[in-house]
Amino acid sequence: MSTFRKRESMNAAEIDLSDPESSRDPVATYGAARARSAVARLVAPGMPPMWAVTRHAEARALFTDPRFALTDATFALLPTLVDAAYLPYLRTMQQMEGPAHARLRRAVSPAFTPARAAAFRPQAEAIVDAALDRIEPGRIDLVEIARPLPIEIICALLGVPEDDRRPWHEFGAAVATGAGQAFVEAVPRIIDAARAAVEAARTRDGDDVLVTLVRTPDGPTAAETVTLVWQLLLAGQVPALLVPNAVHALLTEPTRHPDPAAAVDELVRWCGPQLLSLPRIAQEDVDIDGVGIAKGDMVSVSIVGANRDPRVFDDPDALTLDRPNAGAHLGFAHGPHFCLGASLARMQTELTLRAILRRNPRLPVPDEATRRPDPGTWRLTTMPVELS
Image (tube, rainbow, N blue to C red; front, side, top):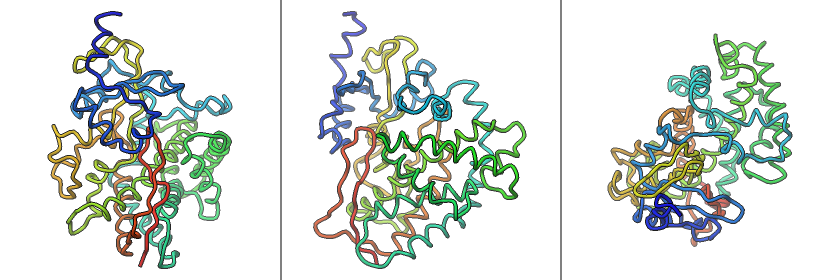
């Protein structure tokens, strides 16, 4: 074994992703690894070994380091059972690099400016309020209530008529599983529906996302626009998972703030649902904090590790709603792949939290919330609450 390779075993902690404890308490798991080194080794049955960068400075640097790239090896992690004709539509901007990524991002960015998110806010607020107004006071499962809201908002963004949205909710439910037969079977239906939506936008008046894109000079191609619809469905899972996490945190953690719903960045930092970023592939041998990473190795960012790094955040395990540097979190990534829809996600999360908190949710005693063991996502499966 080379000297380069020997350094990995001496410095890096090893995390077994199949160990239920690593999923039960990822903050402690990645925190212990972070204390030892800026890089941990991830292992699991049936998965090639992968590295996770656990400290904020090194993780932030990884997002802009050309020595680590999103390649076909990253793309190969997608389900292989999907018909080959549909696979090209599943490769989103997140999995592209260099000039191709930059061109496509420029082409779609007019539809995702902060100003457009602000202009869309009243419509999104009306959607959320109408959905919550249909709920009778009493005991509900907040996970079930939060899940369809992003799909309604995405449909409104895309200009999908209300009468045509039922299949899109089925799509969202399938995507939420992340794998399995339901997911595989839903992919062709999603792509076919996205194609139809893009074609309908060519003859429709309005200022929704699809109309904006099909009328943008030098905008994305039809195939790229269909792919963007797929990406929006994936992105919609973030607020669906974040909102229950955030409400649970606000009801269980000692916090004081006149408007807790406005503290979206601190909530993303403290209980964001994404634990690991898409893996990048080392393009050459690289040393990170004394750990040797070989060319061809897969390297991910431990978002939960970086977002609790005491080198950046004072008292990082405290939920501090007025934290001055909460926006330094990596929940929306960093650099060229910083989340294009971050403004929309912040707005959607804030107004949904505000609508829920207005209804005075209370946890039962004892708390009955449960989580799914998932090495990549911090998600609640049920969260019973009483609503006024």
